[in-house]
Image (cartoon, rainbow, N blue to C red):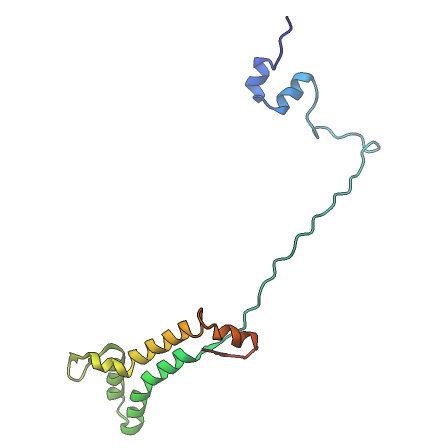
Length: 152
């Protein structure tokens, strides 16, 4: 009875694969030795055209008005003090007082002092987040209208 299948020596060397069957049958694997140049045919390969990934250009630098307005409200009091009195140390203390609530001159903390700096800044950031962002998308409308620099 004739034995069917690959010999163990070929399985040991190549495993059960197309290459093993090609060796067993006495064939050479594809592409191992090319045909003579005269007999070789050149195939034209059709290139697939993939759609290009479109990228959006950044609009450049924009200024978030709500955040800058909140920051400006916090800086207005120390700047006015410095212009009126010329005292840089008092203006710096008022700046620290507005954003931290701690007044260096007296050495105590009060939450009411935050209304001059931190509260306007947080309010501006929240306006920027909710009005300029997802619910109303005012910033997208401004960008579509090609308004330069300004974002809410």
